[in-house]
Length: 445
Ligand code: UDX
Image (tube, rainbow, N blue to C red; front, side, top):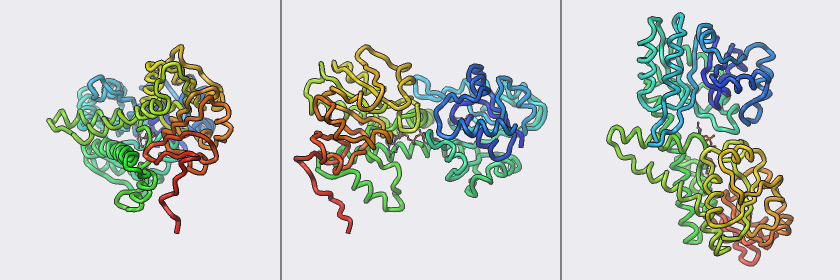
C-alpha cells in the first residue's frame, strides 16, 4: 500500500519505518526541515535501538522517503496517518493545535478517497473533530479511523512489529477492513471498536499502567515501615494471573512523554464531563511524591545536604533512551542544588538532552560512571542502565568519600551489597549492608 505519515516523532517515525519494512511505500512528512534533512542524510533525531539500520535498509530499497511537503505525499497515498504531537497544556489538557493543522492540510491536499488514521493520542471526540475539519474543507470522500499506538521507547520497533493487540476504531466497515489488512502481518489480535472507545482504550491503558506503578510504590513505602520486601511482595502478587507480574517494579516513579501527559489529560477529559477521577488524581500525586523519597533518604544518611557532593547515575526517564521528558532526575537534581549540594551527573546518552533542559553551576558533568561517584558523599541511581547494574560496586566504594548508595530502581542485590561497606537504601526493601545482613524471605524450596 502507499502510505503517508505526518509527524516524525517517536510514533510517526517508528510506525512509518516499520510499515515500509513490511513492504509498503511510505513517505514520512514533517514541517521541521532540519529534522527531514537529517533523516535524508541517514541520521536519526532520536535514540532508538535498531531504527537507524532499518531506515537505511528501507531507504536504500526505495520504499521509504522523507519530505517537508505534505500535498504530493497525501495525493499519492491510500492511507494518511496523523502522528503529530499532542503536548500537555498548562491546565493538563492535550494541545490539539498540531492535529487541527494536519487535518486542514490533508483536507486541502485531498484529490480522491483516502483513509485518515489518527495515531496520536487524542481525547475522546477528537476524531470526530478531525472529520468535521476535513469535511468543511473538501468535497472528496474520506474516512477517519483511530488506531492508537502503544509502543514503548527503547523497544519501539519490537513493539510496533509485534504488538500485543491492534485497536481499530472506525465508523466504516470497509475502512476498518483495509486498516486490518495493513496490520494483519503484525498480529492476529485485532480489535475493532467504535471511534470513541478506541480513543478511550489508549488513555485507559496508560492510566492503568501508571496506577500499577503508583500502587506498588505505595506498597513499597509501607513495606519500608513494616519491614517487608516489596520485590518479594510484587513477585508473590505477580504470579496471580489476574494481577500479572509486569509494571510492579517499585522505584522513584514513572516519567516520559506519555504517562504523565496522558494521566493529566484523562483527569481533564473526566473533569470536562463533571466526573472527578479521584483514583487517577491520587496516582499522579503519589508519583510526584515518590521521586522526593530519594532526597529524604539522603537527608536521613547525610543530615544536612548543604556543602555535600552527591553523584547521580542516570538522567533519562528510563534506560535505552536519551529522552529526559518528565524524568525524575529533572526534579531531583534541582532539589539537591536547592538544598545546597553539589551534583556530579552521568548518563550514557542523555547528558546533552538533560543539559538543554536544566543546567546549573553546581552540576559537574562526568564522563563516566566511576567519575560521577568519585569523591562523593553519596551516590543515587535514578535510571537502571545496564552499565550501572553491572558495575563493580567494590571499585565504586573505593573512589567515594562516604559509602552511601541510594538505589532508586532496586537494581542491586543483597549479595552485591554484602561484599561492600555501603550503607544502602533502596525502595521498599529492608536496609541492606554488611553489618545488617537480612536473610532472604523467599526461600527457593
Ligand atoms: C509508555 C507505555 O508503556 C506505552 O504503551 C505508551 O504508548 C507510551 O507510554 P514509555 O513511556 O516508552 O511507554 O515507557 P514505559 O516502559 O512504559 O515506562 C514508563 C515509565 O514507568 C518509566 O519511567 C519507567 O521507569 C516507569 N516504570 C515502568 C516503573 O517505574 N515501574 C515499572 O514497573 C514499569
